[in-house]
Amino acid sequence: MLGITEASPSQIPRPRRPVTRRVVIIGGGFTGAALARRLALSGAELEITVFEPRARLGAGLAYDTQDPALRLNVAAARMRALPDDPQAFARFLQETGRLACDPEAVAGEAIYARRADFGDFMQAQMAPLLAYGAVEHRREAVISVSREHGGYAVAGDRGSRLHADILVIATSHPAPRCPEPVASALSGTPRLMTDPFDTRQLARIAATDPVIVLGAGLTALDLVASLRARGHQGLITLLSRSNALPQPHATAHSASPSACEVLGQPLTARRLLTRVRAAVAAAEAQGLAWQSVFDSLRQQGQAIWSALPHAERQRFLRHLRRRFETHRYRMPPQIAAQLQEDKTAGRLQRLGGRIVDARGDAKGLSLTVSTRGGEERRLKAQWLLVATGPDHADVIARHGYLQDLAAQGLIRRDSHGLGLACDGASRAICAHGAPVDTLFVAGPLARGTFGELTGVPEIAAQVDAIAHTLLGNAIRQIEAQAFALS
Image (cartoon, rainbow, N blue to C red; front, side, top):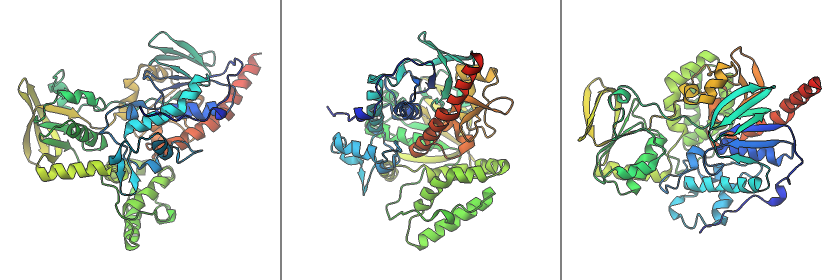
């Protein structure tokens, strides 16, 4: 059995005297665990509680899997999960023997590890903190939150009730929305699978069954990889509005061009597109891959987003978002090879269009698709898998505790429909437009403010900034309130 290397015990604060200030983090995936770790290692006198129904902290929706077919779409050397030790994950793979047991992870000079390995890595970081009592893990889902004595009353689904002085929303990506008319026509049909993250359900699919996957992003490609790893040889149809797949990673040299070649002051979506095209042309003239430009663009993403006026952000989302995402969120080389093999063998087809009719019975499913070319096509399959991407626009309705906070006027949707509104310090924006000093939004739900906030390095940087703010301004406010009540 492979071992798990843990953080050095010398780094972990010993149990402290009881304190009255508690930080409650809702969600114990990478975002919530990284913040809990950062606060615990600060040595501040805080009680840190993470509500997370999964058995371990740090894995979350993305990495809590034992499916060996699911790989990171970023090279291990770029999974900079710990700002204080950027190469910690790459070193973890070597030291625990995971890399030696997974030779397929190596693609050229890069390593694309299994997602489960990154989940184990984060678990290793959290285990000592949990053992020493620096972080408490409540294995529960939060069902309600209400204002109480200047803080928050947080209730879990197993009976917990805690008072939080500071509350952090680090909820995972919401589930995808099943598109109409599929949702109404096929509701309750056992051949419709709406949870793309539970790949165990794929065991129900026979080896030659034809399958339709709604979506063509990385989650859809994960389903393809997982099916093939299980021996599935039937036809898979990727159906999406754009018919655009994630692009592959570069095989040639891809050193990033200088930041000024992309950024400048692109105050409109059109100018941004023009600058990116110019940067790609310049990079290719230097013998660099176009991917180098998007690696640089990723590093500048938050600055570019913050400079764009609201209307230009909307134009970007409406006209450029899908094009950007297919170049920004690239497929790992292993999946690229699998897709090429399937295409050559005639086991994979792609179709761009909109579903106008859906029917299902005991014999199978059929969809009528209005294609991008204007014609209608009829697709038949035994199974329909939904992988259309997280439904961030409706995230408040997906969680009872967020509905509570919204009803109390403490949170609201961001104006772009990407998650929850917050300011540049990640403080939630209330219904009246003011930031709430003791309520934070961490992780992808804050994308409306930050733009680029999906990858591990960007989330790690946001977590570090939240910790800095939380340990400063928010704590001082609590102390001032306590003084005023004394």
